[in-house]
Length: 350
Image 1: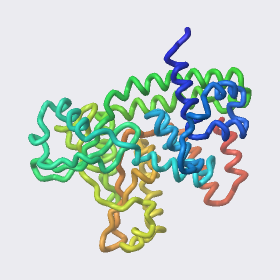
Image 2 (image 1 turned 180 degrees about the horizontal axis):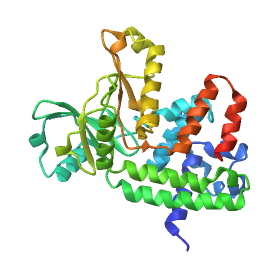
Image 3 (image 1 turned 90 degrees about the vertical axis):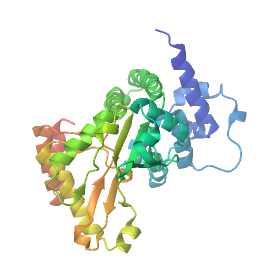
């Protein structure tokens, strides 16, 4: 069936690529060469003028302008430095919590409408300027009328229809790739889009995220070196989440960590122990552990420093087969038995 809105979106994407000068890069590397005639339909005068923009920044700006689905794609790519260059990964990393925010007034209206209460009835103070803004939601600092310091996570307004249209578009493009570009068959783009769709739809529901946080807190209640923020269920619904505020140092800020006496090597051991406990003991783990979601809460005694996790929209679990595969793979890496690593990859069916 012919979908006019789908093709309008395709031309908008192409216009953005031209605007930021990415069309020449994509075509010169062989990508999209078969669609080169479409780029010629966009006047070159539409390019942004002014200072020269580096490739990584151009990619970030394009994804940022195209909306939530593409921002999420950029966030995922930012953690794959085995696939993309460091400079591009660094720029895409800014999409983790530095996406342009929506108005604080809009956030206030969403909170009041969803809770059925005016802001002063719930919060003694509320910062209209968000401290973080990402593809799905943004976060404001507040204080409850009972005195607790909290963060308020608010889903972007009218975001679901936008995501649904972009998911439809990406499925269409994935099928076109699989049909007309032979290498795409091994990359399985439709499966990638399916996984991304599930991930984003799950992240839209703040009740699901709150439940994930509470479940993780229960599972890991015996881990003295892990902090999972408390959820305030009375003020949480599908579009707003209110949770304990975590004050810590981003895990990638090595200089700040060392200045407070934290030993990065010891911290790495703690992080691995926490992750493996979730994966192998509890079968329920935080599956979005990029640097923007991991903080360190130092203590005067560096041995007592704690790792705090935030943002529980994406969680995971592994079946017994995958658990054994992962465990044996790690053991093989630790022993530098790379033949065994290769054998495990083949045996896994991947």
